[in-house]
Image 1 (cartoon, rainbow, N blue to C red):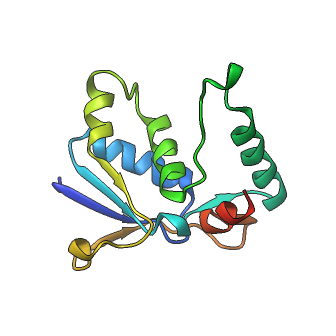
Image 2: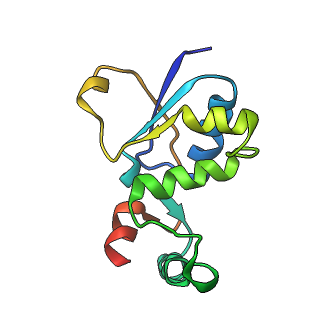
Length: 135
């Protein structure tokens, strides 16, 4: 097993990225997701935009939360958090600390080998960069 795993999110579904990253983090690897703004949400664009606008507008009961960020790396990291057993306790907490998301490739990780999780591009989708502009 690799000590560090670098995932290229370009053209990959956030669900696939999230499940793979969570599994690797639970096994003890440090997970770095790069190019997160190029990850895609599958489905109709209008439905995805309306869903995220509704989530952001709610803000929970009496505006105490939960809050949903519109930053692409935070949307992706929250999706990964949903795949962990319990991000506040035990194994889930330890795995949560090993996950990092970036909008582009940082200078210190330019030379690293990236794992690509491609999704068919024939399906309807919206990438996180486009979603961020619409919110």
